[in-house]
Length: 339
Image 1: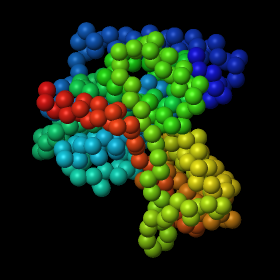
Image 2: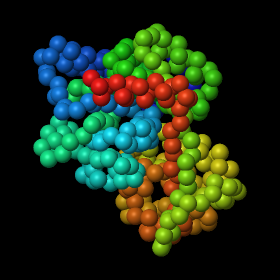
Image 3: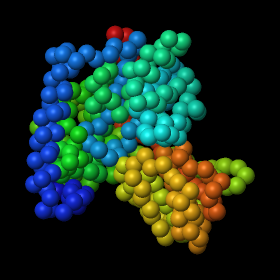
Image 4: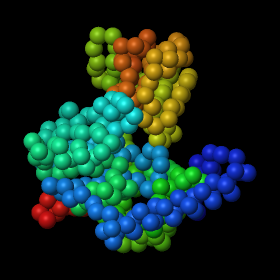
């Protein structure tokens, strides 16, 4: 078991026995569900083109959103449909829309019923690939390539299933994957990385492990009239107020610290948070003495940039991979199109 402060459960110890009992019931339910699909008692939908699933085995931020965008850049010479769940009522304002408008041949649909969304799309359109966003547990759709991301900062929480921990499935179920991406590999400490490799060797020794690093791509400044890129050095020693609604706010905070700015206020919201007028008012009040207010690219789609009194900076992240790992991933993508 990986022992870090991040792995402590976010609840008082005295309620753990109750949560653990519930997690045993949860294990039985998800195991039964997987078996129903394995033995085809419940049928999975066969899409008209190859499907690439990108998912995780824990709740929280593993970096799926930037990795889906990264895959789109690798597939720019192919028609790609991103199929997402959509969250709450504002499906079009979530990270479903991040950057895809800048990518050629890429379309995105965010809908709760992804099978229906797929059928409707292919009545009038076509695509070379489908990217199934957050798809590891979405067994209703068959996939040709199953990619699972593991966060190298907090890989398996406390190694317990929901609600006693953050695992959505038992670790042995990683054997359903074709590729495991060690996300934010450069941000994991050596002890944690060693334990990750030991854990994965124990539970899924035959699954290829590829490394992925998150690096700062650009900083975009949004003011009242225009937006424009600024140099990273601009933030050195500047006072900033930061906020985010992502699964792993600590990763965002580390990026800010690397920029050597002075963090006056750091306000994390729940993942996929929809910002209200009250939230914006609080942020404006908190940032009164700040030079900038900063958020992630994921948050950008849920806010009106003109509502902020200070200049708003948005951090854009890009994925990089070691040469051999990237080559293996590209070959895997190409191979399923030939099937």
